[in-house]
Structures are given as C-alpha cells and as structure tokens.
Image (cartoon, rainbow, N blue to C red; front, side, top):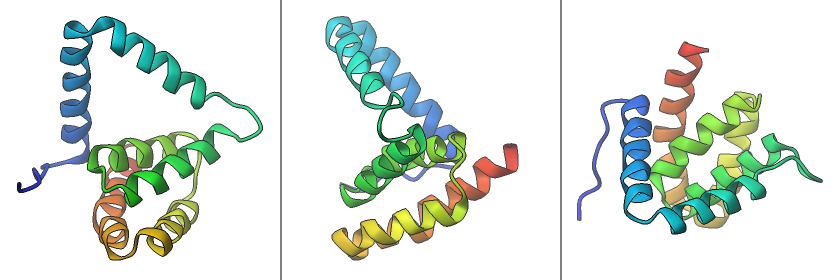
Length: 120
C-alpha cells in the first residue's frame, strides 16, 4: 500500500484530528480512556514534557508512524526543544531503526521543523 503524501504538515495534523474526532464519536469509551492514559504519560514528572516528546519522536521514527512523527515534532517544538535536540533524537532513532528512521529524519522531520517554526 502506498503511503499518502501530505501537502503540508498542518494538513496532516488536521487530517489526524478529524480522524480522532470520528473515532471518538464511534467509540467514546475507548477514546476517552486512551486520551486519559496518554495525557497521564506526558505529564511532567521525573522526565520533563520536552524529554517525553523527544522520546515519543524517536519511537515514532523507529516505528515509521508518519502522523506521530509530525505530531511529536510539533510537540517537541511546543515544549521548547531546539532543532539540534530534535535532530540528535533523530540520530539516536536511526542508530536503532536504521535507514527507515533516517529517511524520515532527513525529510519529514526537517519539513515539520521548517513549516512549524515559520509560524512561531
């Protein structure tokens, strides 16, 4: 199956949010519990919210989840991560997941950084 190409990062984020909305309408109990769980996971604790977003980005790259790559690159930027911190996270992900993670780092992540920092 060919992966869908997005015209912009914001279009991909909109598409994801629309999908979450539809899923939530159809399975509200599952969605509400999932959202509560993920919110709890990303709360400030021994690790900062920024560190948790960087970890999530690395996992997203390693698992080739394009929506999560976009979402967590934005999360990293929103939590104050620098481009250098984001790119080092990409490097660590590539060390574990090889070329597949690196290909997303040199394309999608850099596109996200460029597009999202233009709006900040």
